[in-house]
Image (cartoon, rainbow, N blue to C red; front, side):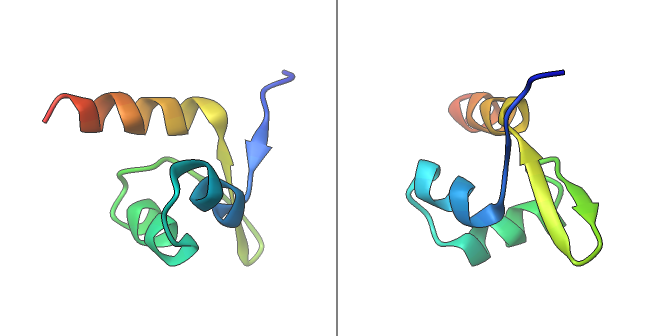
Length: 57
Protein backbone atom coordinates (compact mmCIF):
# COMPACT_ATOMS: atom_id res chain seq x y z
CA UNK A 1 0.00 0.00 0.00
CA UNK A 2 3.00 2.28 -0.45
CA UNK A 3 2.37 3.02 -4.12
CA UNK A 4 3.05 6.64 -5.01
CA UNK A 5 0.06 8.81 -5.96
CA UNK A 6 0.47 11.87 -8.19
CA UNK A 7 -1.56 14.91 -9.22
CA UNK A 8 -2.24 15.69 -12.91
CA UNK A 9 0.36 18.47 -12.66
CA UNK A 10 3.01 16.03 -11.43
CA UNK A 11 2.10 13.50 -14.13
CA UNK A 12 2.39 16.27 -16.72
CA UNK A 13 5.93 17.02 -15.55
CA UNK A 14 6.87 13.33 -15.63
CA UNK A 15 5.45 12.80 -19.13
CA UNK A 16 6.50 16.28 -20.31
CA UNK A 17 2.97 17.18 -21.39
CA UNK A 18 0.54 19.88 -20.27
CA UNK A 19 -1.60 19.06 -17.20
CA UNK A 20 -4.75 19.74 -19.25
CA UNK A 21 -3.65 16.98 -21.63
CA UNK A 22 -3.39 14.66 -18.62
CA UNK A 23 -6.97 15.58 -17.67
CA UNK A 24 -8.07 14.91 -21.25
CA UNK A 25 -6.47 11.45 -21.09
CA UNK A 26 -8.20 10.79 -17.75
CA UNK A 27 -11.61 11.79 -19.12
CA UNK A 28 -11.11 9.64 -22.24
CA UNK A 29 -10.09 6.76 -19.92
CA UNK A 30 -6.59 6.40 -21.36
CA UNK A 31 -5.16 7.02 -17.88
CA UNK A 32 -6.88 5.53 -14.84
CA UNK A 33 -7.39 7.98 -11.99
CA UNK A 34 -9.39 8.39 -8.80
CA UNK A 35 -11.40 11.52 -8.18
CA UNK A 36 -11.34 12.86 -4.64
CA UNK A 37 -13.73 15.77 -4.44
CA UNK A 38 -12.77 18.07 -7.30
CA UNK A 39 -9.23 16.75 -7.83
CA UNK A 40 -7.79 13.67 -9.53
CA UNK A 41 -5.07 11.40 -8.19
CA UNK A 42 -3.15 9.00 -10.40
CA UNK A 43 -1.22 5.94 -9.23
CA UNK A 44 2.25 5.37 -10.69
CA UNK A 45 1.09 2.01 -12.04
CA UNK A 46 -1.57 3.80 -14.12
CA UNK A 47 1.16 5.89 -15.74
CA UNK A 48 3.23 2.78 -16.48
CA UNK A 49 0.16 1.06 -17.97
CA UNK A 50 -0.55 4.13 -20.12
CA UNK A 51 3.02 4.22 -21.44
CA UNK A 52 2.97 0.48 -22.16
CA UNK A 53 -0.30 0.87 -24.08
CA UNK A 54 1.07 3.79 -26.09
CA UNK A 55 4.20 1.81 -26.99
CA UNK A 56 2.06 -0.87 -28.68
CA UNK A 57 0.87 1.55 -31.37
